[in-house]
Length: 171
Image: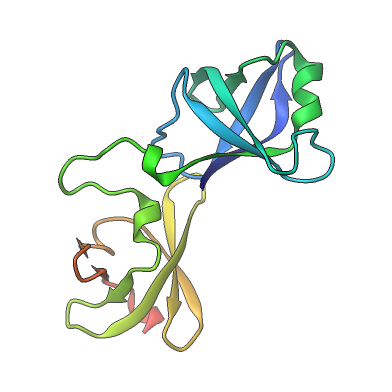
């Protein structure tokens, strides 16, 4: 299961929820899609093993607002909060040639254009302005870089290597 986001508060009184997406650049979530909900702590009344729910509607904007099936009002939703929203990787829609999901880059070895090994992509995060790649270096330290073409010019899935151009301060 790939965690796509989380809900920690309602939106309005009609059972709508604010969904915090971990990758805000694009989302594969859409109306009528079944997603897997997992409780984030004991306050949530979602079973500890999680449950499947259908998205009745979803709106993207300054906030992502979602309505799940069988949620009648704010009180119904508040019983479930806080929870995460996930999908199995195989449920992601196929991409065109040259495109990739960030989750598929985790674990790829980072190498400079000269062939110097830097480390491994450990995770991605979003700071609200851009997606950041967390790189664990060979020495065990880590650093983050914006995931943009200037820093990450090439991905080779066959060799599981991603070419990076790190700023000088990381070397």
